[in-house]
Image (cartoon, rainbow, N blue to C red; front, side, top):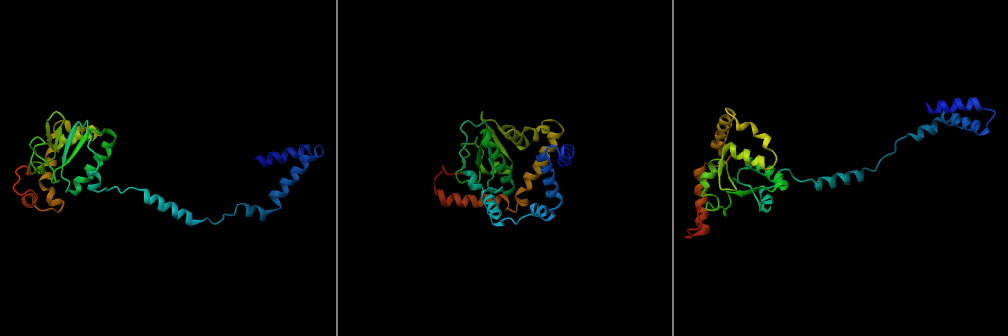
Length: 223
């Protein structure tokens, strides 16, 4: 449209303004008598792919692995003003997916303290007397006032502390609460088998042997 307007103006003023006349002649010669030059103007040129590949490598190198290992997360310091403590099984691969997600969210809130019950340093005395066998049976969380919560309620409390309370909000009401607890109890009962781990008694026996080798006769070093 801009070229047609320029040509129209040129026609009305031809003979009166030599500059406009010459401009009209220029546009006509430019776009009608130089097809080869126009084609060259819009011809694509090869790009340097090496730089593009280097950019991809740089992005890949900076991308974090979504399945961050447990050891890397264990280095995170516990929040000082935590509101709830999560007791989790660090040897459970499926459990760790959820724990890692909560740890990522907790970086913004700092309200959850994470305690790995599979650690040799786990102490029942520091966690309301909850021993290893008990907390291996189902999820446990401890509120800052000392209240112990279990099952789906524990998940709901934990999710609320990191801004995800809506996920489990419906489990506050019956009959959803009972159904959710039943479904979780089935998972808790068979989770060792589902994740390809030995029965709980074998795990306890191996833990006793390990504790005995490490602690000897030290009574303070108990499960």
